[in-house]
Image (cartoon, rainbow, N blue to C red; front, side, top):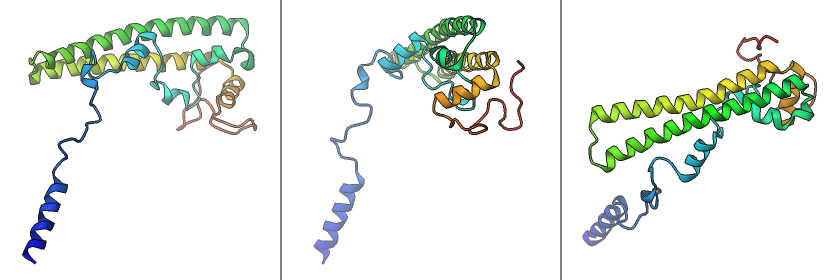
Length: 189
């Protein structure tokens, strides 16, 4: 009986201890240039891609300029709208790329702080706050251009956009409408 208890205890202890051969989900990432950023994320930041930063706008009825431009014919954009949305796309890309490069630089400095074994609470705090502010700038840029794009569209174009993007059905009055969430009114047109 004592042997059975010892065997059970040994088995329980071996289960409680991590396997020496268990792989971390981060294994293989130690060779990244900037540990916190994948190559794909760096490419996306450098290209000014949205990466989901503007989902709060997109999924609540504030169309993105890139998608509006892609759907220009289906939305019935007039020449003025097409021209302005094209300008917004170019401005958004330029701003998002610059903000993305700044974020990459901050993350590189943070990575270097640890790689050089120079991390301290004050240095860490400063670099984390810098990186967070730069990431916020990337997100704010994407969100702001959704606001500007929505302001250019007529209500029926915003509703059509929702249908075309699959966020609403084609029935009149169905799905979310721009500006009608939480008691807010839409942008002035």
